[in-house]
Length: 423
Ligand code: PMP
Image (cartoon, rainbow, N blue to C red):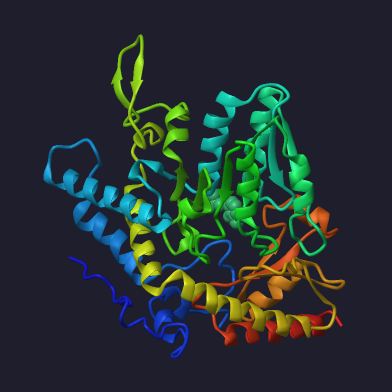
């Protein structure tokens, strides 16, 4: 039997991220202790995926060691245990999002899968020729391509809210684009490529005034900002477990129950039915109608543990800490000759996307890697944003609460080195 790893308690965390900094929290992440290329790892690729605390790793190991069984099916002890743990994770997610009902929480493979579910279920059943879906110019490909696919099939049109040079949505243009043809607004809450925090309350209020539902891509918001889907009043909210210190292959689609009730299933198979004959199938109730097949049970349980972990620290505390860290990093990077930050919105979460004059982002990433500094280089699955800013790619450092000022100093030092190499 594996014993659960040490984890920070709410009491022990009273001064986490403020008085005592984050040293104690860092110890919860075994992956942060390693060296790469002989240098201590400085992990600044959190927007791609975050590292996992020991308690998440232990929860998954414990599941496979002593609880493994299929859910919702067996009459035996282990199946009951696994079902309780899986449904317990759903309750944690519901509380995390402050959704009204457990049945509004659907386990998926990730944000991509969640958006595809809405595109293929809501989109395909509602869209008619001439209808419009409204997205923004800063979307991740996973909030572009599924809509293109369904628009193409239905003869509908994808409209795009433009952004300004700082990487902020132009709200007047948004208002202008909203019309009777708009069937859904689907926008990113926090941009992975620019770090922009979008004014989603305003976006939702304007859409709702016309009775248009809104989907929020919360992939980058979930690890950084406290989310309350009732207060936001969004209709759908999608996020990935692996960016929230949980396992890969897990994600959530929150949907308002009355909307989900009217939507057809996206995939058919086991668990999503209540009765099957060759003539007709009666679908299961929510949320199981949208969870065909054996789910990622260990993953869901691991995600539940990740949510517990994050909530013990507190998202408000995380957001405040990262806000300071971002300001510090922005100052350091701004002092580097030839460096241009892409994405300078007034409201930003922990993303520093930048280009170095005359140097390809991949070269920046490779040289930094040799210094032990892990960042991302490329188009960040947001090619249209790159085009908007006239760059083929950016280098991107993205923060989590376990990052430190020293991490950002190591990044800046590495960037001076990059400049020297190319001088
Ligand atoms: N949307 C945004 C804003 C993202 O940052 C990402 C991941 N980079 C996704 C969607 C897709 O998430 P996943 O690959 O976990 O499905």
